[in-house]
Image (cartoon, rainbow, N blue to C red; front, side, top):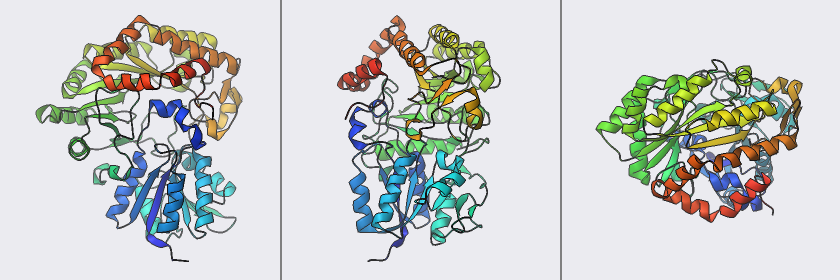
Length: 482
């Protein structure tokens, strides 16, 4: 058998469920985001002289054969798999297949699930050789440079020192993000056309996502901070402008969604970046997510002039008592004021909510609906609360309700946690009611009608997949039949 190539690695983003169901997966119909973490790893490894290929099974559900063919023909020494909780077991299936084809291959897992459950993962899954915790660029490169051997000198990894002894080398210091190359978008098959933002969340194509910061200084109970921690690091305005210019020049991108938790947290950066977009226009638009504490009318007007098209704002729930259990500095009046300021600046406003938090009641759901429908929101996204490993409340969530820890269903689209005093049937019914009330509001209907002019491609996608959206509205099920 030919010797494995020690300077070659395959990077994989698992699908998370059976490929034959992908065509009816409402989450894929609505949104396919490029795996920016893996693309960043690929770009960094290239600087270190390591060849990598990237296969995104979520964007291309039938890519299993591509993985098999690559392993047989290229014989990489390692396979890197990045996955969320819902995709982890699919990642294990891929690792098992890789070891069956190349018994000597080393498997390296990364992402929030394994960062939070590193010891458990290595103890329970022999298919996993290494876990990269937190940021992966330097740790993965050093594993490869060390011949795929574990070492206590490599920070940010976990591995088996012996069959029984598991070693975690401790956290790694965060990178200066401006030193990183732009993600290797070119390694994503079909980019940018094979990826798409949520329907009615962009004005034009081609479009893509971008991440310009890592970490979040807030410590909400429901957020997983196992990868980037509680600090906040960010790309400079100059780097950010150059990144967008690269996306436009190389791929023709016309709209970008900044997938940051807190895009405006560092105000001076945003002021400088938006001034650059105004003074040296790229003819691009962008979306971002903010907290109400970090926007004001002056900044919003400048963002609008720079091309900001839509802002998402975390609301979570309209019940202040429930919100205060899980988030500090609760002020629904400030959130409402922020929505009105966003709209006054001429920017679309989107609310982000979740249902089923510990302490949720039918009354708190009613309060959420009343609050949301009192606001001039153009769109909203309601997810089903999921207690992810790495979130502060994960370890004690069973004290507050019934938790079905089925990893494949932990995707924010299943009620795996049922708060005390509630039932899954009631939660599902209220979830459907929430969405139906939203879509039947005159403001919502008029807003989506206006998208015929502002985002015509979204309407094409909506009409094409109308049966899938109707099925989801009726059944509340993510996946269709086989």
